[in-house]
Amino acid sequence: MAEKSVEEVLEAVRRKMSLNRCEICNMEEAKYRCPRCMKYSCSLVCVKQHKTTDNCNGVREKTSFVSINQFSDLNLLSDYRFLEEVGRMANCAARDVTSHKPRTNKFVNFLRNRARRYNIHLKTLPIGFTKRRENSTFFNNKEKKFYWHLKLIFPHSHAKFTEKRVPDDKPLFDILKHYVDPQESDPVICQRLKIYTTSSPSDIQILMKVEISPSNTSRYEELDASKGLLDNLRGKTIVEYPSLHVVLKKFKTDMAVLGYSENKDVL
Image (cartoon, rainbow, N blue to C red; front, side, top):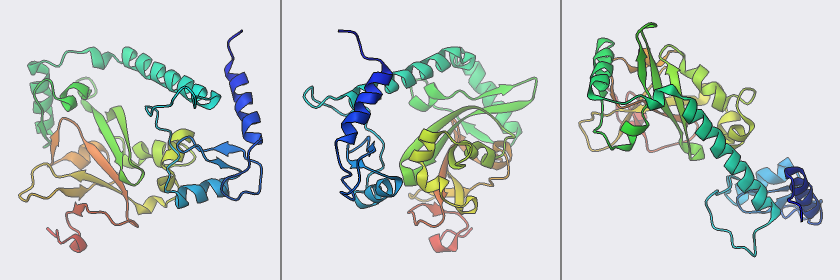
């Protein structure tokens, strides 16, 4: 028997869904199926209601176990796309020349000295630590510019993303556009960060953890979204690379922000 093409698998999935009713309203013919909990739905309204009622984020657990008896064409298609994504990431990593450069003590010292000139206290970890291995930050002597390894954390969506080769003069808001702007973000990312893409840009707050704190509790500083990393990092301590927490002001968090009286952390 010939192997099924992706188009044939998709058609089989559509036919199977058409035989089921929406599990949310139980009235219309099913058109969608939640990648995470496999519930059938018929429209965007039902999808949203399902996510709210069942507290489901709709993101498939790519490493969850599926028995052979339950393995369907939908699982096959999902695994196929996952392998494609892994292949693209591996190809990008192979093409990234900076990832193949040895991180010698000479290079690390050079990076720290350059950061010190800009009033940035850059701390590096010993070889073997995860942050040390994955850090791709470098300084371009010709342009006199840092290209940062950057981690973006979206706590309200339980999502983390990594950006590489981020120029130090690129405004933070321009960096976030790829994630929070519904017109410019990737459809998959847009769906995962739905709570951010449907919020007002003025409601978004960018925080960075204070690495040297006199108390035992973690504290954060708010960054200026209109400025680049270089201006925002001046006078601050960074361990390997910046990690930015993107939060929404309309939601309460346990993150103590310096300068906010409601957190009792007024400087």
